[in-house]
Image 1 (cartoon, one colour):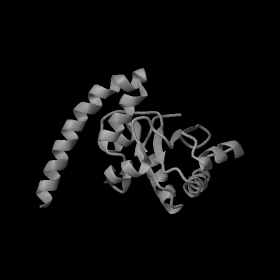
Image 2 (spheres, one colour):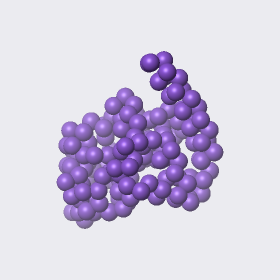
Image 3 (cartoon, rainbow, N blue to C red):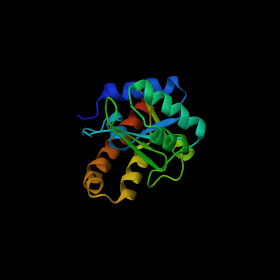
Image 4 (cartoon, rainbow, N blue to C red):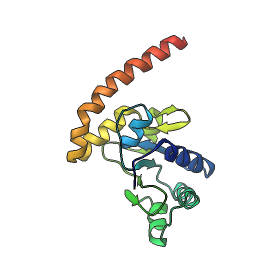
Length: 163
């Protein structure tokens, strides 16, 4: 599949919202939605772990065009830690237990909303990448941390301009 695109994020947001799924964008796709200048191959979606939320996500994914096997649907409904899907219009990773983040509710309290996208706070995205220990994540961390400084300064400027 090609690279993650804004229109894919819109489709996820609109469809997951319509079905009432509780989710946050995570990983590099989340950072991109916050303005991080990079690319990634898939969307990373952090889902709240509950049977109701899992069923909502399964319905949303099927509407988006993902062909889910009964086993995949069951894994999502049960909140398996990580479910990778490549059977739809784009690649998506569903994450119920991301490394470096204690629980969904904690990440939800810190999340950022930009253009209607609910995104994990950049600190959570960085913490998750640090905790995975994967080479590709370690390589992107210096750029993500530099972007965090820029992003935080600009958020503060916007907040003070609104006062």
